[in-house]
Length: 124
Image (cartoon, rainbow, N blue to C red; front, side):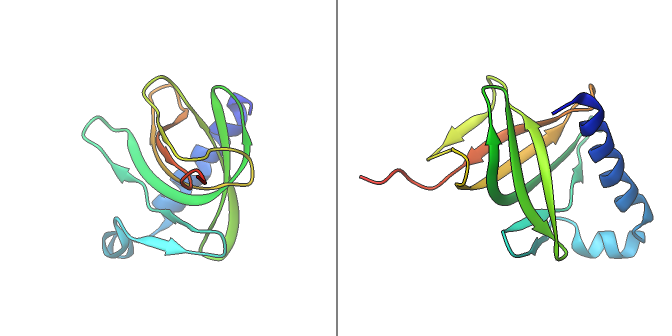
C-alpha cells in the first residue's frame, strides 16, 4: 500500500471522529460495532497524541511488513492496511482468508502499525 493511501485512510478516520458529536463519541468510546465480518473499535487518544484501536476481520493480503484486513463498521465494509515491525505480536494462523483480531496504533509518520495480530489456533 502506498503512503498516500494510508494518509487518505487516516484523514477519513479523523474526519469521521471530528464530525461525530462529542456526546455520541463519549457514549461509544471503547465500544465495538459488530458487522458482517467482525467489528472495528473507535480509536482512542493516548497521552502522546497517537491513536490506538482494534478491529476484527479477514486477512486480504499479507507481506513481510504489511497486512491488509477487511472488516465491517456500521454496515460498511472497510479495508485497513497496517504496517508490521519487530514489536508486532503474532499469534495463531495468519494467512490470506484467515479471520484475525487486530490491535493497532498510529505513529508520528502517519502510518498505522499493528501491535498485535491474533488468528485462529493451528489445527493439530
